[in-house]
Length: 177
Image (cartoon, rainbow, N blue to C red; front, side, top):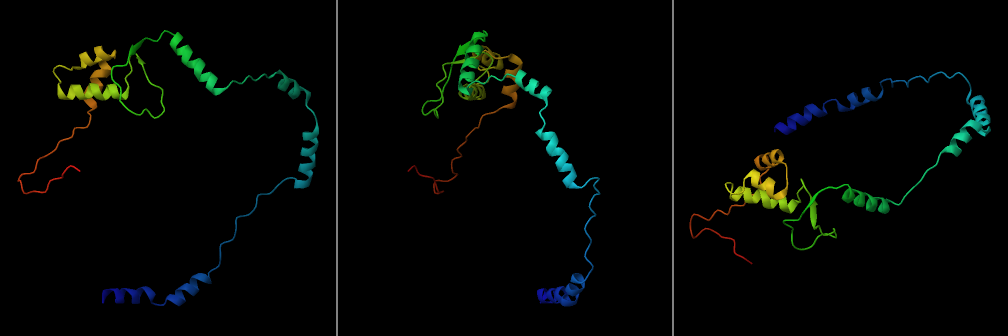
């Protein structure tokens, strides 16, 4: 009953209200900005200035020299430069087995950096055995800064999976397939 009453009030005098709204005076458009010269005169002057040769601009253009290189060659050069700069590297401690998604196989890592596998291994070891795997030991093993290692150990925690056994034997259990 309530919906019927609400519909009656909503549709009351609907045609008259719609007609009143349609018959209102429409707002007028904003006025155009005044221009100083007609477009035909401006365009003829512009055409003449475009057709003229400006010798000073041509001399500047001739003095510009652009050298372009292949992007793949540039990355190979940058890799060689990074190795030549004397960045100390350490051998890779941990790696994920299996498919590498067409990425090059890593054999060493710059000192002060970790791979994802090494970070997960270090954080997991610290989580399971915090007395033996302290921040100092992790920093020493992976050649990291001690301050950064303490921050990582404090604020980053790897996922912890816990399997809660059912309280009774009659409860439904997931069976291995």
